[in-house]
Image: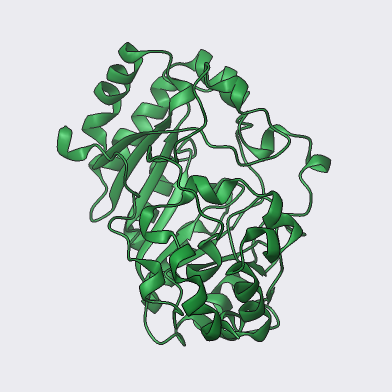
Length: 338
């Protein structure tokens, strides 16, 4: 079991010292946000709020499959493969009726070293599971929200069959082929040390990797402090201490493509800038665009100078690792982002 437990490191593995390799000719990560909807209403997520409180996220609920394929075709024009294509964002990817086809198309085009999905796992029936494995999915990251139906009701606001969930995850694991299974739970879903042990006992044998992650503040309108039983919100999602950095690293290594095709430079619930739309522009051109360079250059002067959204953002510090800190590299890098 011990060699399965992920603690203090990113589930994506070893990180590169970002300041030593910028500017990147190819992003490390492109996040596909395929569905702006969810079957859960987790109280720490934007979907716990009325939709009119979300702000702008997407003009479409589901990403059009042809638009998606165009986006993947564009990625073949990067100088090399991206490190990861990740299906995530503010919604449940398995709600997309074409999710297995989307994975398969990305694998066939060979645009990424790893194709991952982040999911709550409840829609993993046998047909979907086998389709994802056959499509070539590299990693399935499953977020567990509690150890009982009552806890799911409390955190997610929905009624589930907990035994059915375990059965679905067991089926996927036993039929996973080359897909790696990463199962995680957020710390506020566990009441005590006994429940932590129970989590590892229940899910440890049906996961290749397993972790307890930490609640981090992602949405301004949500009171996160009330959910953590007095714990200080002073560690990253994976348990490392918060690092003091005035620069958000995300715009230097990633892009996110929203369901309506708009491209943004980070995982924030509020967008500091829309860089373009993949229906109108090639994603490679967006990555190299003057508009993006100007935004990155502003970011090197600190989040307070990058945009109003960035100046208010807390989220970036909870997703940082020591390899991401750019403060000591900023002056040297400024001339490269002009």
